[in-house]
Length: 286
View 1 (tube, rainbow, N blue to C red):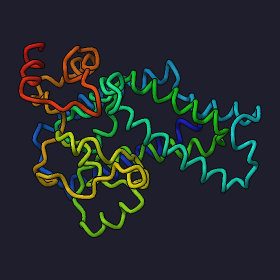
View 2: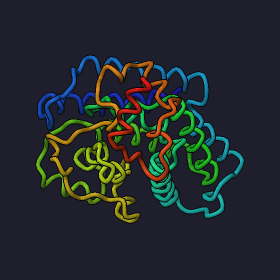
View 3: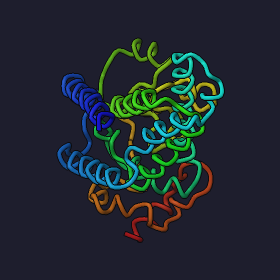
């Protein structure tokens, strides 16, 4: 319970700060009514919280406790100082989340789930919270497996989970700030401008900048996109190219989205490369 309250407190603080900055210094004018989007996004958060509460919500933390008690994982073999183990474990967890995000675009079965996150026609702090509950469960199992294999200390898991939640909110925030500051920050961290490129409807831009917290993995793995979106940050079209109407992005429609059989969701390769015929195909299946 302490772990959950601590993570929630840190998340709430970051979220309120991001919303405050969005109101004071917005980067983009909204293209959709805010209230309707927020209702949907927070409804999804509520569903995700309930799913986690009654399934595997604390899986990573509890796995870390069990692994520590039973001497599991790489860290128990290395027997390094705590600060070194913590640093290595944090970096490896962040890289694991980067790889998970890449696979969410590369494998059609995972893209079906992840496309719900990309369907938001605007992005702001609330967008960092909208994930399909099945994707959340898969992520919980994935993180628990990584924690068990590495034997990560429970406090490192708490710190990473809090960082991950806060970074998800911050990188989606609709905040205007100096380009020079963005250039400096993104040498190490994922910034809102960097991640906004990832939410472009253009495949060449969507399949870049997969990092959540550290930007180094995109640089090392060749998925880094340094330039602004081709249409500019203020005018770039966000979301999925085959769902452009907010009326088709209701709560139940989003929850059902992964189970629709369309050419978009079954395309091989990275995220769907949609053409006019496929857009019409989706419309006809509605």
